[in-house]
Length: 269
Image (cartoon, rainbow, N blue to C red; front, side, top):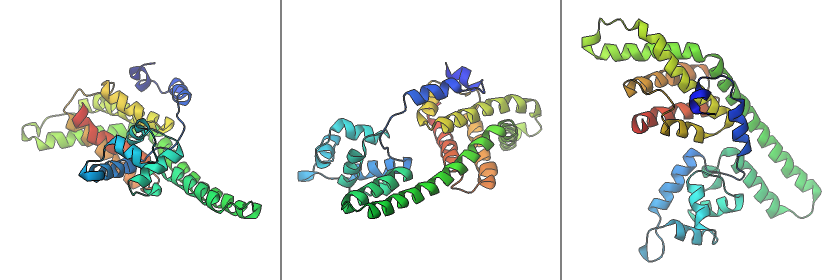
């Protein structure tokens, strides 16, 4: 199924099915963690003043393969031990690099391994700690799900308001267009913005940034106008709707998607 069909179809069962079939295992770095990794590598110095290449980092990280290191630096999942080795080789902390759920689990597992004496009562205490932590993360996921469903339920209204705000700003900034009637264009532009919101919803639903990146690379999203119009419309949704409706943590992933599009549209499209 093509992106064009997906973005014009509310039923995305096929998309979910494809995503689940190829869902990778392992742990991966968060967007913030990737930046820390790249900054640490860029500033790293190896023996004899040589720059820190992937090969040299692989050697430092308990002799794991450079292929695994490169994979981790691309934001792809690797096994937990390899991820921890890479992170520690760069003098970083797992909790700063991995997604929070993965960081919690890795820390808890390390504690259990370090203190495991065969005492079932002690092991039970650690398990309770994991369950408590995961319970907190489940609440965050529920909040994130609420933001996602809110986006789905309000796509039309959000698109309409965002399109009107962006067009108004565009025409007001150009004095030659001050008296231009753009009301007839709002409906057309709002349909274009709705496709962006559908794309965000799909990505949140299947938890895949790859879908968004592919849609942009393959130009499956509307780019028929001045690109700043799309940026302004999405920025309006982020700052005038999402940030007012939700607390930052509740809309964390929705905001990340909006920020990604806002930054990448002028570069990629």
